Length: 68
Image (cartoon, rainbow, N blue to C red; front, side, top):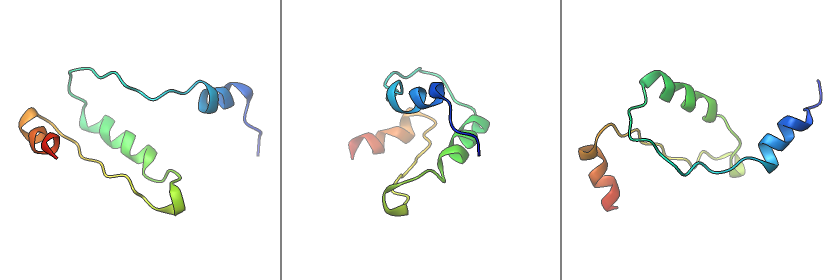
């Protein structure tokens, strides 16, 4: 196994930031599947998958979620 390089370490642990800006545009299904597949087996606390993911396509679907 090859050691991880310093650029990757920096990107993961010191330069990464939470995304907090959103664009008002649709994301295609293939991209959503790719993102989900990349994160579904990620490490979690006590090996539990605490994430709950809802893909919302329009404002009418989103309204009941916002009210909660």
